[in-house]
Length: 153
Length: 150
Picture 1 (tube, rainbow over the protein chains, first blue to last red):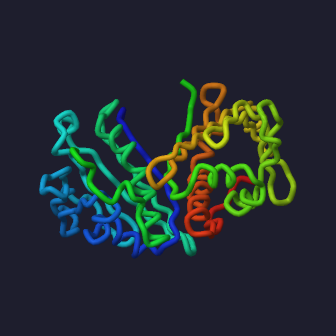
Picture 2: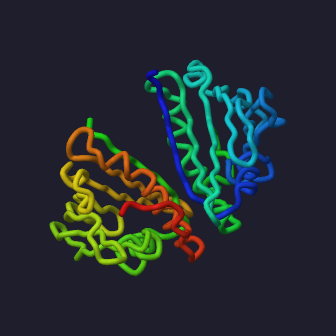
Picture 3: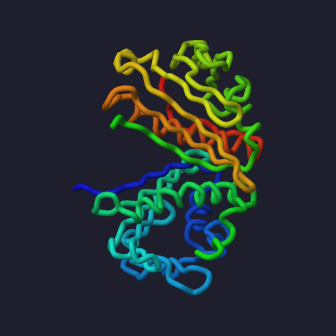
């Protein structure tokens, strides 16, 4: 089916358990994901929300898959940008493969419509965020530019 | 439109450090699966990517070079007859300084539509560039974890 898809692969010197936690738990995401946190109890079918630090809902959906520490997936509809919200739900999948001391992380973000603004947006957002996550796990310090929610956003 | 692969990463380093790591053979060997590039790093100069045992993996020439901002290589696979017969690709590396980090963009594109090398390079670039980032930020590259071409 025609659609829009973004796939990003990175390799991080960490364990699947640490990475699986860092991708989801507020004490980590608040450092590398611009102070955002995920409101979710992480069961299949549970509601999922990505919360912006000022209290607004950034994106929302539900948990499609949850298989710690290997894989999780959520439906993901934007809430706070009208031109993206109108596109409906995308799907974001996170796959973690242990390879010795390294974990291969594959993030796949896709939607069943062409030229999606949401996918265009996340295509620009995932590389700096995942680079910051990698820096946090490998050096103890996230990249400066993803530590805070951008002013005025 | 010709098939292309684009990979973007951000590294806590300077453009000069990143440029050195990309263009000096001793650095290459640490993060590039033991491989290194042989090149005089001038426009028009021949370019090779060489395995640790001396075999040539890929070859071509420097199309554009502007240290420490951008490098464009003409690039053809040399050890797989099918990929070799596909002809050349172009690989553009762009380095952009930002606050507290450097943005590295690698764009690898076939010179003909449907070039068969392009779908094959994606996992290699992700590993090589992840290893480069670890080397520059922690002093240690990542171990090779998947079989590289060759």
